[in-house]
Image (cartoon, rainbow, N blue to C red):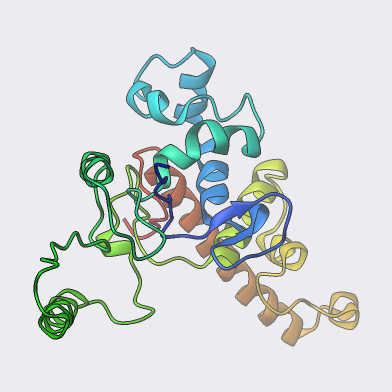
Length: 244
């Protein structure tokens, strides 16, 4: 029976039933879910969706589709896996058939999978020595090292990420969009960007409370600037980038 090669992701894939697994995380806390959410905030891309995929973002639309017309679970299964998965790879140490070798190469073998020729008429000691030498030369990435730089996904993650920080940034952006006149310190108080003002501080509004408000205002101001850059860059097919 022909075996299927596994698809894997640099960021853990979203889970819709369980809260976590070895290679997955609850979808609301997933980096690819946030990619989808930030793209939904891009006004130019929304206009493209409203036009049925025509205009300046037509090329991106051809890959991501209408992110406003379906929920994330539906979109992920139709688009996300194809966009973010690494090339397929074996899930164990296998003796591959000729057909499986061809399938693996044609699918775009990633750098974490080696195809090795083993002459079975060699002595086992020589075979073992040869394999050990190959592994020593090939396993250059340290255990636990991030795979972002070597990603072969159609849309690779641009850099290391902090999911909770990205969620907080998006919350600040959404709250400001919904309430344009809301003071930034109040957004910080609602979202929890920094230490919240106590009931006593809110009541007295003394000098210490005012200083705290200034710090909270500055924190949200930075978040809003980051959100703007993240949204601009996601419209270019790059995420999460907030410093360009």
